[in-house]
Length: 168
Image (cartoon, rainbow, N blue to C red; front, side, top):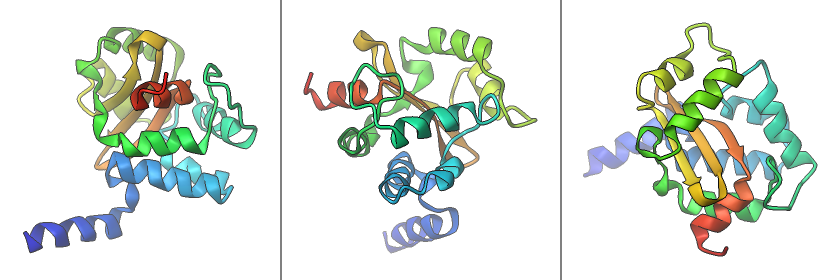
C-alpha cells in the first residue's frame, strides 16, 4: 500500500496534476482563478490551431453565466465537474459517440502531426472520456494523451455541471 501511495505521489510530481481527470480540472481551476489564461493552453488538446483553446479561454475571460452558452463558464460549475470527475466514461460507451465522432472528424483538424486524438476517435475512442448530459446535448470531453489528460471541449459546461449535480 505504501508503494502505491508513493507511486501516485511520484507520478503527480513528475507528470503534474494532469495525470488524472480530477487533477487536470483542478489545474485548470487554479489557472482560471489566477487569470493565468496563457498557462491553460498546456491543459488543452489543440484542434484547428488554437481554436478550442481560444474558445474555452474566451468563456473564462468574458464569463457567460448562462448555462445555454456554448462556452459559458463559472467556477461553481467547474467545482461540480471536479467533484464528479470520477463520472467520466469512455466516449465509446456513450450514446453520443457516433455524433461526436462524426462532428469532430468533419469540423476539426488535429494539431499533432501524428494525430493521436483523431486516430483514437476513429478507432473506438478508448482514450477519450466524456461527462455528458444527453438530454441537454451538452458535454465535456477529455483525452488521455500518453498518460496526460487534456481538455478537448466543453459545450455548455454549466448545463453539464447542473445536470450531473442534479440541480436542473
